Each structure stands twice: as C-alpha cells, then as structure tokens.
Length: 230
Image (tube, rainbow, N blue to C red):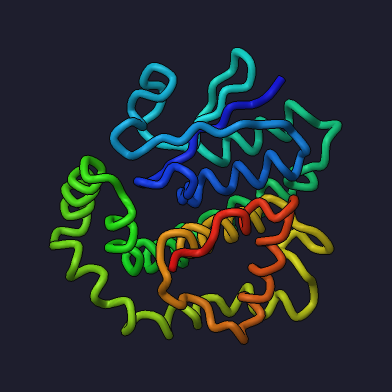
C-alpha cells in the first residue's frame, strides 16, 4: 500500500520546502517504501486529515495517521523492520535525538531568519498574509528587519557547522559509511534553505557543501529533483 505524505508548499506546488517533511521523504525513500505526496499551503495545513495536526509532516499509512517527524521515523522503522533501518538500533535512535536538537537549536534559527523574506515571497497571497502575521508575532518585529541581519550572521553560522565538518574528515555520513536518519535531519534543514532562498549559506569549498551534494543525489536524486532557488 502506498503511503501518503502531506508536504508544505508555496505558490508553486512542485517546490515543497518544509525541512521536517524532507526528513520523512528521505526516510521513506531510504526504506524503499512507495509513497505519494499531497501539496498543502500554510493556510490549508489545519484541514489535513480532518484537522489531525497543526503542522506537517503528516502521513497516512493505511488506517494509521501520524504527525511529528521523529515519531514518524520511529514508526517506519518499527513497522517495516525488514527494510533498511533509519537508526541502526536503539543507540542510533537515541543519538538521532541529539542531532535533531543540534539541528533545531544551531541550524534552524539562523536559516529560518535569514530566509524569512524569501519564504514569504514564494507563497501565494493568502499564505503571505498568514505568514507575515504569524512570524511577526513570533519575532516581535517586521519580517524585513529580521532578514536584514543575515549577512552579519553568516560567518558565525558557518563556524557552528564545525562539528559536522570535522566529523566528515573520518566518515562520509553522520550515519557512518552510509546515511541514516541523522543525515536526513541535517539535509532537510539545508534543503529548506536551498529550495527557498538563493542566498549562499554554504561556502562551495566547505566539506559540508560536498556532503550535502552527496545527499542531494541520494535515492535517485530525490532532493535534487527540486531545483535550487534562483
């Protein structure tokens, strides 16, 4: 049975951008599970599966409906144990929690602020109004002033990638010889930036950029199929 994945989109329904949805798309491909996607703009998320969740990703697998990306990944591993593991065991699952927190606390705040106006501009008008109101409430100031600091913050953000950069000197993926769910956590964050903003977040000479390039080609080029923002 084909799994249904709801994904967040802007005005162009062929350009999904949610980092959390990308984690799950990569996870489904990793496990070789057939899935189809359904595009959902911001203002329609609350209607998914009869109001099941306020956020995406949401998946439907037969009669099961789930949300929250980490919970979905655990479900996929436990429900389909005969397919390639996303965690490589309980220890890997616990360590993936650390990578998730590192990504959310280190990568996401800068990426989300730096790409804020780019994300706004790729939305349909109704979603732009929702996005501006919700994000200006979150940040406590106009969107334009939040995004204005991205040049000043870029160097510090690149320095914060050093744990990943250093790790890549002795193994090709966070998961070791091949990718696991922690790779998809970080790749999902970088794909979010890549799809929404032309801003050069990564130095092309950075080993992290090379690693992300490998991630773009995983699973038949699943990430690369969506062109980078121009």
